[in-house]
Structures are given as C-alpha cells and as structure tokens.
Image 1 (spheres, one colour):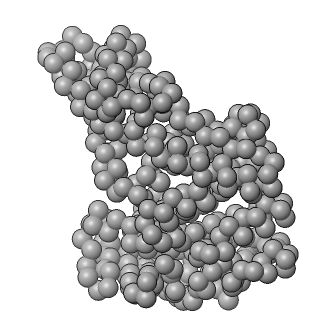
Image 2 (cartoon, helix red, strand yellow):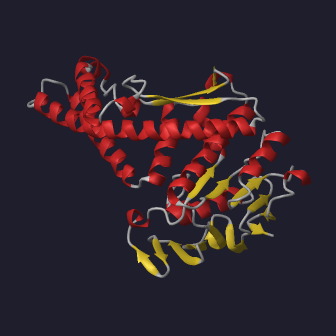
Image 3 (cartoon, helix red, strand yellow):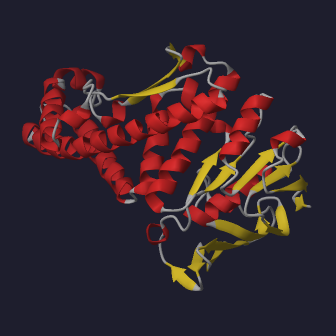
Amino acid sequence: MYISDLKMVNYRNYIDEKIEFVNGVNIFVGNNAQGKTNLIESVYYCSRGNSFKRVKDNDIIRHNTDTATLDAQIIRADRRKLIHIELGSEKKISINEIKINTLKDMKSQFDIVYFWPDHLRIIKDGPSLRRDLIDEAIINLKPSYKNMIAVYNRLLIQRNSLIKKGKNQKYFREQLIGITKKLSDIGASIFLLRNRYIEILNDKGYNIHLDISDNTEKLILRYDNSLKIEDLNKHSKKDISDLLYDKIISSLQMDLRNGYTSIGPHRDDIDMEINGLNAKIFASQGQQRSIVLSLKLAEMEIISHYNGSSPILLLDDVFSELDKIRREKFLNMIKNTQALITTNEINLEKDEIREIDYKIFKIEEGKIK
C-alpha cells in the first residue's frame, strides 16, 4: 500500500501543488516555515479526516480564501482509492466518489504511522501523553476502542461531577454505585487491551532499539497500571472489574476531599528504561528521539502483522540529533515501506541511502520541486 500522488489547493500555505511520490523513501528538504509539516499533515488528513494538530478546519484553509481541497490516490494490491476532501463552510469527504457522511464512517482510509517533534514529549512530560500514544495505536488496530475510551471518559466526568457536589445530595450512594460499576467494567477492558498492546510493543521495540543503537542500548517498557497488578494476563476481566470497583469505592473519602476519581485507567503510565535507567531522567536528546522512533517502527510492524500490509510512514524532522549509525540503521529498517520524511537539510551520506529507492524534493514558500 502506498500513496501515489497528492494535490493540495489552498491548504495551509500551498496554493496549488501536485506531488507524485515514489513507493519508497520521499525526502522533503526546506527551511523552517516553508510547508514541510503542512505536507505531512495533509497526508494524515486524507487518512483520518482531521489533523494531528487538533486544530479547527478553518485554520487549515489558506489565508484570504474560502475553501481548501485535498485529492489523494492510494494504491493497494493494484486497486485504486481516490480520496477527495473539501474544507469550507462544511467538510465534504468522498472515497471513490462516494460521499462519507461522518468521520466515524471514514475511520482510517489507509494505515499510517506518524512522527512529529511533539512526540518527543512522551519521554519527559506527564503520563497523559504516554496514554494517548498507546490509545491511538490501539485504535488503529481496533477502531471500536475509540468509543470505549469515550464512554469511559463520559462516565469519569459524571462520577467526578457527583463527587464535587458532595455526598449529602439525594440518592448520592445509589448514583455513585451505578456509575462506579459501569466505570469499573469498561475500565477492566481498557486495562487488558493496554496491557496486551504494551507487551507486544515492548517485545518489538526492544529488538528495534537494540538494532538502531548498534547493540548498545536495551529499551524496556512496563505498563504501570493504577491497580499495581504486575501480570494482568493472570486475571479475568471480571476479576479486574471487581478489584477496580472495590478500590474505587474504598478511595471514596480521598476522592471527596480531592474532588476527582483517583484510581482507574485515566491514572495509568508507561515506564521506559534504557539499560536499566529511567529514560525520563537519564536519556539524552538523541536517545529520546531513538526511543520514540523505535516505538513508531514497532507500531509499524504491529500494523503490518495484523492488517497484512505496511502502513505509510509520515516522519517530520526525523533525522535531528541522530548520528550516522542511527540514521543508517533507521533507513535500513524502512526501506521496504513507503515513507515521507521532512528535514531542514540533507545530511545523509551516499552509503546511507545506496540500497533505498528514494526521491528528494525541495520545499520553499509552499512550492515543491
């Protein structure tokens, strides 16, 4: 599967540009603020129907224009998929000229794995970013998981609202028990899905990172679930649900003081270690980037295994802070899949790309050559 061409009209800083991609490594070179990230975002938009930047559609339309359009052609097993998106007073999406009514119907039109510099924050910043990373990856494989997370979050809001109002209100106990039971049931499912995905991600990420680091760094991931159960696989969903319910209920007095629910999947984290040391504290900038790239490549392998074809890699400013060995190792790992890579300058040596089918583009002020 690959994207063969893309046309952007009034998308961000692009007036009218068409690109034909190679089914290999496509490298986009340019200074800052020329449109490199906008290009990566446009391909993401064609897959998901929204931006990874979580901005309003009106912010994507080029200044002083009313509409923007994207047209992409995806090839999979010799079949073509034509994606047309129009942004304006309303969003219009069609696939092979058949209108898509909602983003829920669109799902993912083609598999992608994307990296942009904000992802580096998952190492140093708070646990919410690490949870989002895992949840988004699971959604790619199991779209119904998105609704599961949404339902859990709605129940969590309801419980927190109930707690803040106080236990002296009418039917407090009955409402609390009802919401907590539902929260625990769906929370148990989230625990199990996250646990299974992190196990697979750890296995693949370990080998990938060992290779990228030239056998010098061992990456270990551990699921720090809020129940503090080391091996969730040994417990049934009902057992986990019952345990979660008991712990949430037993924490009621603390929750009433704090004004929020203190136990559940919304408090999960992922521990990351390099050679036995906490990556959040000890990893250098180059190691941080290598960790995230290893996780993204592991995600690519998982998607390839479950869906039967490699996803398209969208990689924004991926080479910064990587030495020659890590760049060469990384490029060797992606040579059999299509990748769109942006960089400020070509710092690749000929021996790094000698066995790769590649094409280099120059981006300047929204023009692609």
